[in-house]
Every structure is written in C-alpha cells, then in structure tokens.
Length: 181
Ligand SMILES: Cc1cc2nc3c(=O)[nH]c(=O)nc-3n(C[C@H](O)[C@H](O)[C@H](O)COP(=O)(O)O)c2cc1C
Image 1 (cartoon, rainbow, N blue to C red):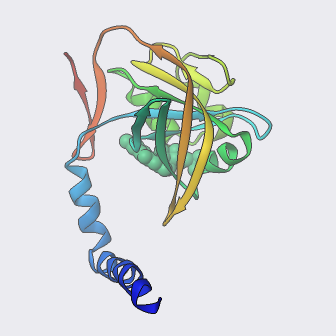
Image 2 (image 1 turned 90 degrees about the vertical axis):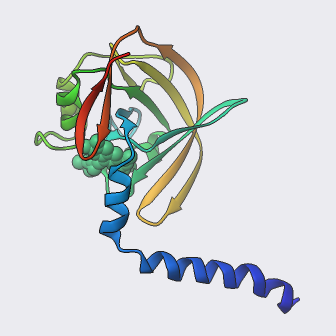
C-alpha cells in the first residue's frame, strides 16, 4: 500500500516545494500580462451588503450554469459571502473606472458605503447588480475551497442579465483599458 501512496504524495510535496521557489513578484509580473475583464462581486443578506472589484471570475460549466470566483480571505466581502451564501457578478462597462476603484477599497469607503458609486438593483437573491453592467450573474454558493490566500467560491447561476452593446473595461499591465467592439 505504501508504494501506491508514495507516488501522489511525493508529487504533491514536490509541487509545493517548486511553487515556493517561484518568486511572488515574478508571478505577479507574469499575471499582469494577462488582460482581464473587470467585475464587481457583491453580496447582501443577514451579514449585510458589500462588494469587491474582481478579475478572478471564470465560467466553469453551462450545464448547469456554474461560475467560480477567487476572493481574498482577508477581504471584508469574503466574510459577508461566507455568511450570506449568495453573490452577484457585474461585468463593468467602459468608463466604470471609478466604480472599480471604489470597490477595490481605494476611495476610503467600506461595506454598504461603496454603493454610492453606480446605480444598483437586484435580480433574485438580493445581491446588488449594477445597472448598465455588460452582464450580471446572480448566484448561490454551492461549494467553497480555501486555497492559499484565497477562497474559491463555486456559484450556481440562478439568474442572468445580458447588458446592451458597448465597450468593456479591461485590466492589463496594471492599468484600465477600454475594449470597444
Ligand atoms: C483590477 C482589480 C482586480 C482585482 N481582482 C481581485 C480578485 O480577483 N480577487 C480578490 O480577492 N481581490 C481582487 N482585487 C482586490 C479587491 O478589489 C480588494 O482587495 C477589495 O475590494 C478590498 O476589499 P475590502 O476593503 O472589503 O477588504 C482586485 C482589485 C483590482 C483593482
């Protein structure tokens, strides 16, 4: 039995050791070359309302519609989502830099105060969605995984709003850009 165990366990240990050998800043520099849509993740419920600017949002499956987001464990929004068990994702349109900066905590506002930036409504769960978002997803948390500094949240998408045509906000090389189709 020990022989069968040795393979996978050894491989995991080696991966952990090798990951440590890659400098954190080198990894951040590499990821800065990846252009990403900018979203605001929001939540509301028993624990209260809040939100954070996010690029780490990905589609997992369309059957059933499922997304994942990676949210820093130290973020105030993380505690709220853990308790509320719902979140919404609003994809920012061109010109929404101020909303992005507000929800990144760079305007000195926290929790519900951040919603002074933008106009917000709701779909099903009560998590705020941005009026004018390129698209919005309303989700219930169906799984959570604590990985390194972040929580990987898996969301079942229970409502969708597809926004109108127009430009999108993109984060690339540590700056905001507009992608205008
Ligand atoms: C362009 C951009 C992308 C970001 N992407 C993420 C992300 O994917 N995950 C994350 O946890 N934080 C991300 N952040 C940082 C959070 O927005 C920020 O830490 C958070 O809003 C702080 O929230 P708090 O003050 O409620 O703790 C990003 C910030 C910016 C400006």
